[in-house]
Length: 117
Image 1 (tube, rainbow, N blue to C red):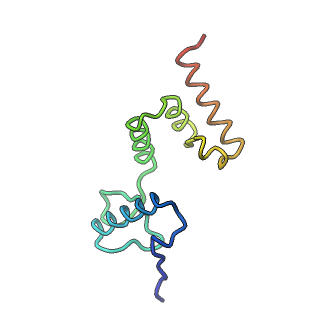
Image 2 (image 1 turned 30 degrees about the vertical axis):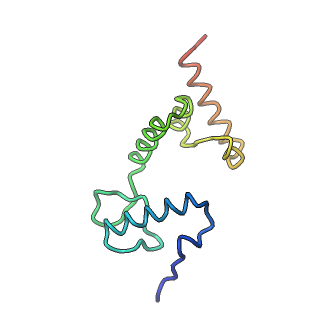
Image 3 (image 1 turned 135 degrees about the horizontal axis):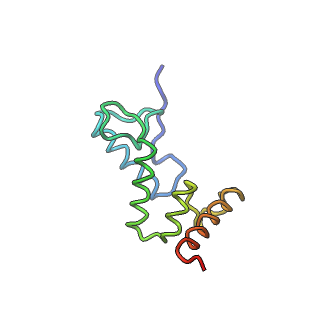
């Protein structure tokens, strides 16, 4: 039974996101010699011979490095490491109250660690 494919341009996403999806598709094609199938990871282990998701620890380490490189506030990086969340003015409304509280508590904890007085 043939699978139905949705064109990336038909995905309801920002233009920037569609560009990133196309880039990930192209990288997938280069690595595996075919288009990704519906259940294939677009963020895959580059050392694997078959498509498999990246190891969670590698992803988190890469995120932290990217955040540092992008100039994120160290308190936000610490909060990400503690909560696996990134809270911004643009996405805070998408987080639950509990998630936002946990993230804010981690930021506060970081600031206390730096300046305990």
